[in-house]
Structure formats: structure tokens, C-alpha cells
View 1 (cartoon, helix red, strand yellow):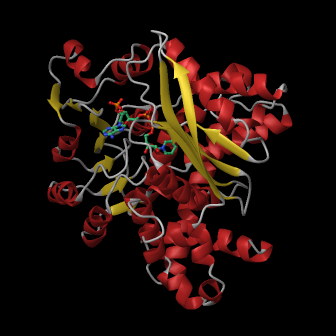
View 2 (cartoon, rainbow, N blue to C red):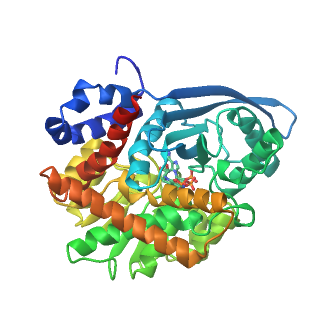
Length: 433
Ligand code: NDP
């Protein structure tokens, strides 16, 4: 805390991991003796840079760009780029730190990184987005590469932004280095199922967790927060598995449709027309729109899937969900539940799927995109989806096994942190880094 003053999100992410590691540290004192934790919390490097760009009125605007290269102990740095006004060093460090363990859990050879900018894409024209992405990449290009650091999307960064950044990268390096970014368009090196991967993967993970207890999505009522990339495909997969998804949200408010949301309306509004959740009720007058996104957790449900942003479920929301009978919570977003909210779920025996395990499907398919780029071939949708399911099942098993091995069976928070940590820690010790 002294060394990283004011970085509250980073402190929160580190605290959660360190508390989980107590059993593994007790059994392996070498990790303490050799200062593995001290090494882990200090990123390899944190790059911060000026991003000047011209708006449509010809005025110069300036934003701040970041890339944190946290750990390449088991593979090249890998993690998304976030464009949102809230982005700062603490946010990218918490995301980059989480990414180390998440990427380790996937079983693929990828290290941890993250980046982004405080640029707000809302209300910007397509040309402004393009000019911003080009300026951002002009600096970022010096630090990334297919074997060095491979960024992808996150909040505010989808296929369009990745496309503009990829185009600029190619101009700067003069080579078609397909594997430098993931989340690319399908026509130029992207992977099928990458767009769907985080949402689908989260539902596959929660499905495993439910089945273990004799439960399923079939016939359950589900609430999904957000209405972006992760949310839309979590809704789609939950519906395919027979659930009724009754609510979603954006940063302005939430939608409640008692008989179940109409997914094709949501996809059109969000993916094509760039509209808001409140526009849904114009087409579906029997649905309800309420201002303020945190109210979404007042809706009774069997399964809650927070898929918007960090700390969107606080202690009071968690208590309300429990009182309303929630049986399972699966984190699609990164760190959407506060530490106190997680305690409420665990104390009340709610099945809880932590972000670094449940939302690892996105980065897993990104690593599959890198593999396809290296091999210069493309797999079919069925092939990639089958691999994604297999990876999510393996992650679930690894987390369960670790939770059992360290005496807290079924606690997936501890299981995920320990399983992710051990591989990275051992690699760091072996390499003396
Ligand atoms: P998108 O930008 O596609 O969507 C984000 C959604 O969350 C939007 O509906 C947005 O509403 C809402 N939201 C964003 N910030 C806030 C906020 N401060 N308060 C309330 N609502 C907010 O992002 P993604 O779907 O890609 O990412 C969502 C979460 O999933 C993030 O935590 C991200 O780190 C995590 N994640 C994403 C992966 C991916 O593959 N994309 C992989 C793994 C994790 P509005 O439009 O109004 O801003």
C-alpha cells in the first residue's frame, strides 16, 4: 500500500489473491523465503504515454495511454486494452495482476498484461475513433509483438478498434504480423468464436459448477448485468441452455422483461445501432426500464452473472441477492464483486464462480487465435467451440482439485488463485526472475 499509494483497485485484487494463498504458503515456505509474492506484485514494467489526436473540429485532444507488462514467466504478456474514462494506473494494474493467474489457469503459454486509455469512445465519430487508435498504436507498437506482448479488446475496445490498431501497427512495422493482436476481424486473421468466447465460457463454467450440485440452467431465471460483448454472449448461451434471462443493463440503467429478454432486439440495439437499454422498451412496451444500473441486483433470480465492470456488486447488493434466493453467481466481468460481497456469497453457501476462472474463455480463444495465426490456418466454429468447452471444463476441474488439495473443498476463489499461482511461481523460481 505504501509503495502504490491510492491504487485501491490494485490493492483489492492483490489482497484477494494473497488471502487465498495462505494454505499454499504454509505448505511451501520457500515461496516466502524466496520473496515470490514481492516479485509478483511488482510488474516487469508499466508504460504510460501521451496520446494526442485530432477531433472532427480539428482540435488537438490529449489522452493518457497505458500498458502494464506484469509477468512473462510462462509466455508472452497477454491481456486486453480498455478505453474508458475511469482507466488509470490502478485499474490497469489490477487487471494485469488478475490476468497473470487467469492466463495460467487456461493451461496455455501466456503471461499477464493489460492496458488501455482514459479515452471515452462514447459519442465519438468513427473517424475520431480511428485517429485515436492510430495515435495510441504509434506509441504502443514499440512495446508489443507476437512473441513479446499480445493485446486484445476489453471495455470500449471491440473488433473495430482492434482493426484500426492492427492497420496502424502494420504500417509502422512494415510486416503482416497477424499474431500481434487478438480479437481481429474474421477476414484478416481473427478466430471464429472469439467474440462469443468470454460470455459462452462463463456460462460453460457456471454450468459445470451447477451440475456438480445436481442443478442446471434449464428452467432457471437469470440476471446478466451489462449489455456489451461479454453480457450479450452470456445471455445467448444461458438461453441456449434453457434459462430465462430477465434483465440486463448499461451504465445508465437496467431493463427488466419478466417473460424473458428478446436477444435479437438487444443485439441490434447494441451491436448495430449503438443505442441504449432504454430504447428497448420502445419496441417492447411490456418491459420495464429503470434509471441507475446497480438496481439490477434487486431483481430476484436463481443465477446472477455480473458482466459489466469492477465492483458492481457491493455487500448490500450481495445480501439482497441472497435474500431473494440466488443459488449461483458467475463473474463474467473482472472483479465485479467487492471482497465483502464475495464473503456474503461464500458464507451463505451460494455457488460462486470467480472472474479469473469463469471469464477465462476470452483469453483462451485469443490464445487459440495466436495458434491459428502461427499455423496460418483457421479452425471451424465447431472446432473452436469444442476447444473452449474443454478448456473451461479443465479450469473448473483444476480449481476444484486445488480447493480440495488445500482443505477448502468447493471454494473456487481459493482454488482458482492457488491453481493459477503455483505454475507461475514455480516458473519464476526456475528462471530466477
Ligand atoms: P463492453 O464495452 O463490450 O461492455 C461493457 C458493458 O458494461 C456495457 O454495457 C457498459 O455500459 C457497461 N459498463 C461499463 N462500465 C460501466 C460502469 N462503470 N458502470 C456500469 N456499467 C458499465 O465490455 P466487455 O463486455 O468486453 O467487458 C465487460 C467486462 O468483462 C469487463 O470487466 C472486462 O474486463 C471483462 N472481460 C472482458 C473480456 C472480453 O473478451 N471482452 C474478457 C474477460 C473479461 P455502457 O455502454 O453504458 O458503458
